[in-house]
Length: 153
Image (tube, rainbow, N blue to C red; front, side, top):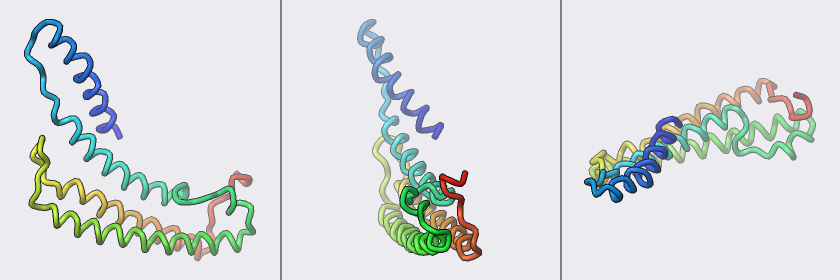
């Protein structure tokens, strides 16, 4: 998150302030071709890791407005089914993310000359974490440990 924020701030500063100073005082311009690519990499990694963390906390892919009003036994069954679906989704994400990263392993980004495999490996890591955290949520549900409802906290 800090990398993405610093990159965006640097991009705005370079685009609006430094470009204006360069144009006003007839100075050589500073190139900031790298800003978009760093932002793209940071956003991809942040998205997939953030999705996995949201799943572990029970705040991602859930509609608590409906499930919190159900009896605990039914809520536990829904959480278990939800976790099984997320395990499948995370597995597909990791498998196809790996295939895409392999397909792009010979390609490089135009500005920074970074291997594009690093961009697409974010889906593999995110998918793996989604599987791990969903299995943990499934184990919790099978043991009878369900998160408290909004009304209970």
